[in-house]
Amino acid sequence: EVQLVESGGGLVQAGGSLRLSCAASGLTLDDYAVCWFRQAPGKEREGVSCISTSDGSTYYTDSVKGRFTITSDNAENTVYLQMNSLKPEDTAVYYCAVGVWFAPLLPDYGMDYWGKGTLVTASS
Image (cartoon, rainbow, N blue to C red; front, top):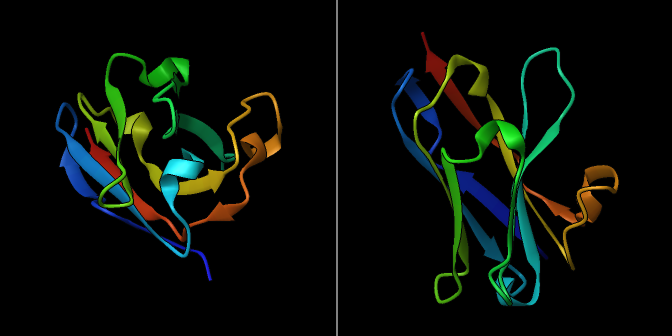
C-alpha cells in the first residue's frame, strides 16, 4: 500500500519560513515525480512545485518562484518543500502527490497517489 505522509506545517508570521516533508512508503520515490499542491479555503487546489527525482528537474508555479525550493532525499524516500518569505496568501492545506511524471497541463498534473495534507498558516 502506498502512503504519503506530510509534516512540517504550522503557524508562522508573514516573512517567516517553514519546511514541509513528504515521506513515502510502499514505493521508491526515485522512480517517480513528486508534486506539492495547496488548497486555500474557498479556492480550488493548485499545483505549487514538482520534482522529478530521477533527473532532478523541477517546476514552480509563478507565485512561489524565488521563495520556495523543492528537493528530494532518495535515501530517506522523502521530498521537502522549503518555503521562505511566506505571505498570508500562502495559507492553505498543502498536499504532496506522486506520479510517474509531472505534467502541469494535465488535471492534477497526472498524479496517482495523494497524502492527506498539512496546514500552513502565514499570519499578517
